[in-house]
Image (cartoon, one colour):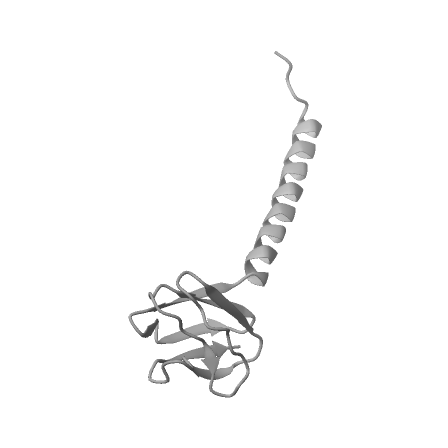
Length: 117
């Protein structure tokens, strides 16, 4: 069995620390840059009806209903095509604010995305 010298131990510890810091920084950046949220469409309802996210988050709506629906911003910022069962639509909210939306095929279906800084 070979014993490590104290200088080798320090070098190994320093190398491990650098590797851990670099790995942590990369992992942290990946998480911050890739925020996502999901909403479902089912039984003529958006769920959740009110979704709060941070600026830069991509929201994906997935149609789990057995008929087509759309996701249409009241301010015309975004509009999906008619989404059949299992289709989805995504939009990235860059700016803080309150965004109301509805289904253009069934206007009583409404939802809100609140974007915080």
